[in-house]
Image 1 (cartoon, one colour):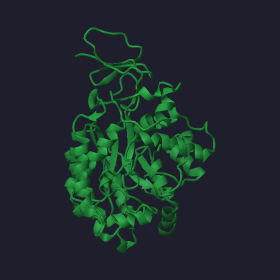
Image 2 (cartoon, rainbow, N blue to C red):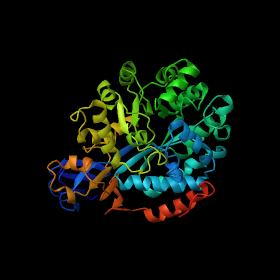
Image 3 (tube, helix red, strand yellow):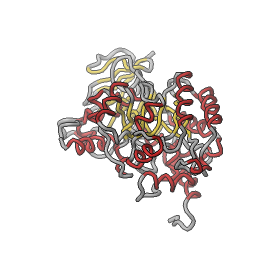
Image 4 (cartoon, rainbow, N blue to C red):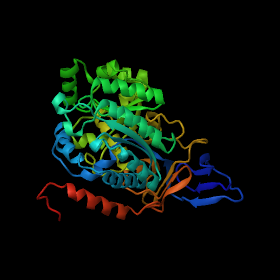
Length: 436
């Protein structure tokens, strides 16, 4: 088997790949039969890991732009209820295409609206992942607490508890391979699910050896709702249900006090930090530095395109750096290398993966080559990548095979995907909305 060598990169040097794994990094001596990709002046990083997304929300970009979380959800729940599996596949293809072009090789999706209980939406997401070629951690999301029982979502978008559990088992049986397609179990949030769904989902996940995911501590409204409903702060509520543990990662995790930060670190619970989405909805700033210092796993999440219209992975590194410095008011508290670590190794840890997220021998060859032509004047190339202009990856490899080559998707035409998405999305526009 021939060896692939990425040769001449400015950082971290050469990278050799054999059998889908990284063989060596740094100065790699040439061997007969090497296949060489010249990367002179470019920057090579591990493939980026997106720990929280809602792919189907590409169908509703640009909606509810002046709303906080609860009003935003109230606006969009009825729209998401109209999605068909074909819509979800079209949206997921664009979502993962944009992620791949911005250096993401593994993405975690959380589909918690399942119109009509039709769980073929998860097959649609898996099909899109195979088309684009990146790894997908597909969360079988769920809601069973509608407005008639005191929840936030309308009754039309919630499901029956027993049906959710049966569907979760079926989706796992159909799709899960543990490497390219990984199924996770993910009741949506404290204000949209019952305690019974949380405990039963945790039991099912642990019986199947799957990880658990949910939203938590995203807004102060959620905190107030949780205290009023359960008499507990959100983290205490989840802890009582057996959800604060090393096989769990939580989306957002903004509003934690000091004791809760310590508890998250002690238990190894993960946090998917979603900086752009949190800014878009005015939710607050995650205590990233404190969580890392406490020992919690912290990764980066793009979140859905309905609250982060960019939908790309690389911009989140810069936003995470800016917000961490704003939170601490200390520009040295969070550096470009910290942002990259969050987006790679930290994300892998959130997802329970010890085979991706690092450029080191033995790790899967999920690798990104970033063009460095415009950064030749910058003394620290990694700082240039994180803080400099937006860019599309030059090459993206998953397990040593190209997903992006010379700045273009290998498995699909992104312009065609966007056109199909726009065609489908426009039927959801409010009556009288301009189509110009």
